[in-house]
Amino acid sequence: MRSFMDHFSESAALYASYRPSYPAELFAWLAETTGSRERAWDCGTGNGQAAEALAAHFAEVVATDPSHAQLALARRAERVHYAAMTAEASALASNSVQLITVAQALHWFDLSRFYTEARRILSPGGTLAVWTYGLLSVTPEIDVLIWSFYKDTLGVYWPAERALVDAAYAGLAFPFAERVAPGFVMTTNWTLDQLSGYLDTWSAVSKYRNINGASPVGRFISSLQMIWGDNATARRVTWPMKFKIGTS
Image 1 (tube, one colour):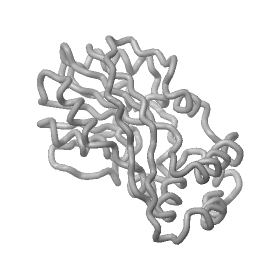
Image 2 (image 1 turned 120 degrees about the vertical axis):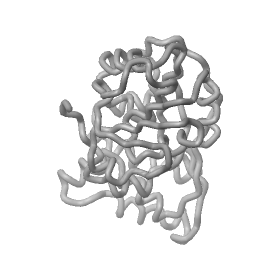
Image 3 (image 1 turned 180 degrees about the horizontal axis):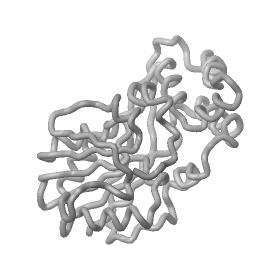
């Protein structure tokens, strides 16, 4: 397996606990785009939240990630099989899956090589679905502070690939016949402690911590306390989702 940019292994436990889940309606819609539901491949699965949701619609889900630390803590579900593989060189047979999903991971891939691999693995008429989600939103007052933390505190610590997420994958090469996805939105209800755990999964926070010896998240959460309220107060958090859906 070739080397890869590993931004998440050291925070794998946090990632498994605090990454939000995608809307169930998304996976039902994706399943409807395929003629058969024998096998799906969730590529760059991370903690397996997409793979687990796909298992409700496919007879088998192969979930791959190059990070052994992520896979060790990934969600276990019936019909989901995990394997350590890169996106660009899998061990899957040609024409063997009806759906490939890439959730918040395409920006880490060697695109040309991955697209070649995806075309090889997809069965005729199969679907490739990739998506990304942007900065979270809570309330206008809180959002201003989150934006400042994201841009001013962490700006220089974000890897260059993050710019593709900020652009919502606009202009990203996608050599497949595209179709429009419905307007899905990711939402959850979180306490301040849960928000803190999520922020600690950010790759920029990990780099900041490695360089400066401490995470900036605790100080930022303290600055939110007066606006947010009690630690037990749950607030609605949303993320905009952007998609590229194509057929082979």
